[in-house]
Length: 606
Image 1 (cartoon, rainbow, N blue to C red):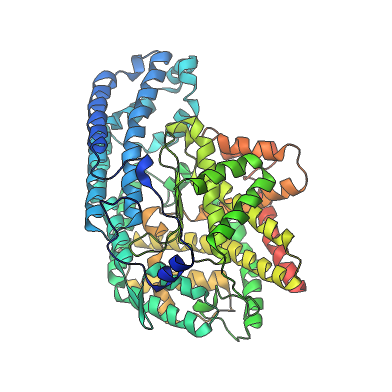
Image 2: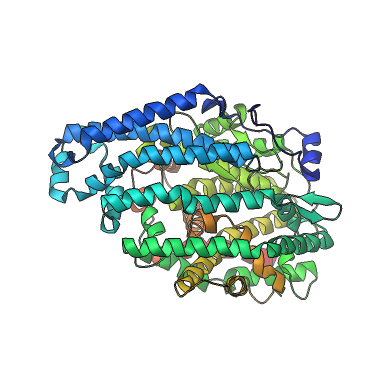
């Protein structure tokens, strides 16, 4: 991180230091948002947003019904400007915190930003509530004006939540209490995980670094890492269980007041997808567990010469895999070449992330684990976070997050309110980027042994995306359903976790009891409940979409880029229609799952 006012609080661990010596990994520069947390621009933007929010409320509260269409369009545009200003402030604080959540000053700045943004935005809560109280006929009259018509997609999506809206006073109370409720528990989770140091041999490593060892060639090293993770999270399992129980109960209370039929319904509404479509996806994937994951892992056990796989064997490389380290520059070249072969325009957008300091790939303590793409605001640009260890999986992760970044750049032209996409569609560009990169690498490889290794790695990635994430969704569903009957003991949460793992991965595994705590490190359960099925949705959708591309669908590349540019202006039905696809058709999901099964067929025949 380039912000000298907030230096890193600890040196990188051993693996990070070794990688840094071999090749300097990039870290992002957040100056395009703000020069630093002490910048006068931050206070200026807070003050301006506070003044504008108060003036906005004075001008429009209680008056929307009487506004003509053009005036309502102007009001929404003004609302967007204030929201984008707050989004810029919040994005900066979130990225700083992701860069080093162990620094107390960063945590304080993040909390201060959350509180001030919440206080200011509470003045705007009335606006969306009042818009949703407009009758359909009255709203249609206003939308007939060209000045208002631009906002039709945003209003359409806003009104999905109309049946679940509470009184203005309750909505404002819930909004203001967020910083001491869900947001505070999420911060506790983040800071706890980031501060953990796990003893492994002679080293003390971050959670991310130890999890990476679960892909080591040496089985003894994998086993040691597995025991170390289990011991570390087992030691704090009561804390993680308390966080999970509290957030599940918090969700139940809010869902009950808002009259959502089941725990996942809010997420589905936010994803602009019907409960029934999600049910169809989960049912289709679950039915295919035997044909997909059970079959593959039985083969993997034979390849590894093991009667049973342990949890630390799931991501083990194949015996003949030389596990060659891939440099950052080589990874960059592979991904951009794959993007460019498909679409030069897509590669040109992707190059910006490498040419400018928009990616943080450095390995260091305090940094968030995993990977993400943060869109920030359209007037700036996205930032990518990855933890690059030099493995093939890391190249695929880079391709994945760059897909998000390209999508966010292209959709940014829609503006702040219309650029965001539901999670299900947001995963489309990322998974498509992965597929492009994989296919390019596979097509260029002539060694049958290397092709088999690459194919197996891709199958494992797809199983992690489709099967594992569907199992995560089933775990969340079971947990939230059972939590409604009272607090769950850590042991019971572990039982639910092991149940879905056995169901999804099959009899090839012999799960040790220590694996019962591995649910505790997964941040999606804390930050974004029921997010995880979006990965399976996106993977199956991309498999179907890529099959259309391979069949030579006319103008596919341009249609694909137009789909990304649409942002949140179109729903999944409208976006997929130009490709002849329909996610509500049960055959759609089978089409995507057949791609994975076909890869496994090839491995069986090899």
